Image 1 (cartoon, rainbow, N blue to C red):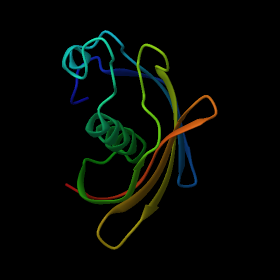
Image 2 (spheres, rainbow, N blue to C red):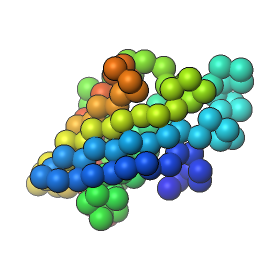
Image 3 (spheres, one colour):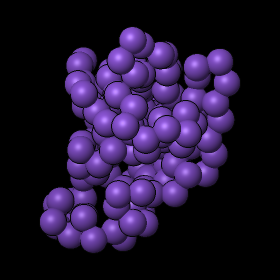
Length: 121
């Protein structure tokens, strides 16, 4: 985990290229003191790192992000109001590594969609 204690994985299941994870963001993490004081917002780069780490965990491989496309931050993830997130990862093998299509939600709200290409390192 790149950011120590930033989130906990409550559940992570992987079968036939589909991973489903339930995580909780730590609202007391130091990153929220600067992003933003009095109105915490989960940084997009942190969400992208979480997706990479979950992908590495289910694939049991170390990954490097080569590219990201269709990156859509659709709702603010405020760890004080919506710390519990559900991530769906559609993982497929490519010639150069793996493609991961992600959708992240809290409740019925879509927060993030993105497609990422990783190479194995």
